[in-house]
Length: 305
Image (cartoon, rainbow, N blue to C red):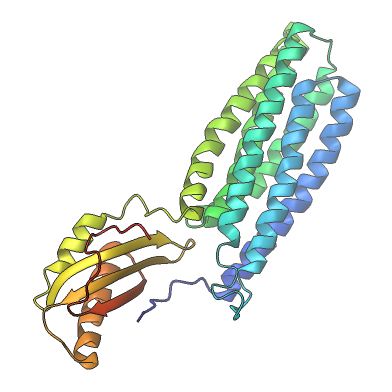
């Protein structure tokens, strides 16, 4: 038996997220094309690395957009949860891509540091300014949604790190123009890559936890079990699973031994009280309880299925 407290975003808000993603995708396609051409002409690895990162942004934003659309599709007999985990999967893919791109940049930066080249700094400066403005606008578009949605956070992080990378490229361009410090290009590329790994790792870890059905860090399983056990009619709570399905849903399922052979209507009253308890205190909005009386099974809180 289960109960659901609605936390879903409205269709209008979801459409707004989709529109903002489309705008960001188009901006990043333009920025990437400009930086690739500019990087090849100027000889700047930092500019090319920023272009590569921007291209990864385009891919990640497209993945985020598709995932955002998939979450609207209805459940079916073959897909009983629908596509509710699409955005979590998108966040995992995007975080992984962020780290892979960073490793490639580190390799290129080391090779270029060993063989520094003269770079056309004026082009680097102007194109980095264009990238800062374009990515800055995209960051503002996605900032609000990134605070409550892992998929949007992955897209936001891609854009934010790219904006910061472009700031670094701009500073490098100025140092190369006025001080001829061409080795700065490699140092900046290396720094950008380390920053990408640092930003991507937490998101990769969080999305992995959700995909692996781990209990959310903020949910104290033992405390919840004790609170449910405190109900007068309940003898034992066991076989507990708590997991996060997506951004909006946390599920609890458990077996509950009752002291007496109660009726279904009495069980419904207890179930309602349990739902109110876990929702109000722990934001658990899907509860599935298997009632038992004198059943001979394992009574451990966590049972290896």
